[in-house]
Length: 328
Image (cartoon, rainbow, N blue to C red):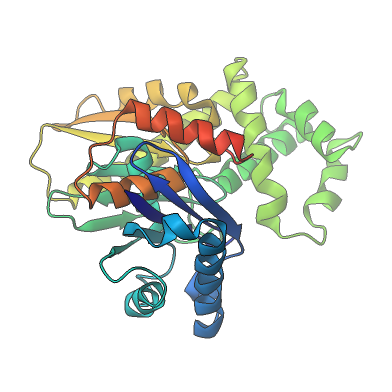
């Protein structure tokens, strides 16, 4: 059995043909496919490109695709479901089933292996998405870096910059983040960072990478960095709680998957979040992602075929992704 999985976003689009054992038979990565940032024609061209490349890589597997799961940013918001389905139908076997979902569903399934729950994504941006018992989607936070995206890589980077400048002028505590940021920007003094931040690049692209220093220094015990992480966890939990409160959930436990680059050192975040969740009526259990988001899309496709996904599938899929040179 073969499934087509698509993970589409505002930066890149990844698609694979996989079987139920986690073996990848074709894979392609192209540019963005978020219809909110491109014309309908451009959107259709990207999807066409993806499908044509996959078919050329493995025509035998392509004509045997039984299910397609496309988790894509902006498609639901732009109401492009029917447009995407039409493009997919024009290439896929007639009997293939198609499901369109938000790209965050890929990240959720990459941690729950197809079960409902909540995913907290924290990368360049941050968003919380829940899939409840009735398969309704609830979304909280993530309304843009200018006034939201709390706990995102950008937000943590901003907090690091604030801490460094406050330490410099005496308004805050001394922190190892000062040395890390000066080294990052290759400057000798804190004020010289300003020219780097206000340069030609987009602020998010410049500031978001600084979040990794916050996590690294927090793990080493830097008090200022640990405070930044603590406050970020409080914001995550606030969003997770708001999401859960709007969900129809009948079980006594709910999984929350932590996905995105900010959670690379996930062991730093889970104990704090677990402590914040202690008093909740529904037991909240936090988990790291087991696979990249495209793996979650494969899970979605297999789930629609009635397939059970286990740890052997996860191991094989991740191994195949590593062999291809992709991030896991």
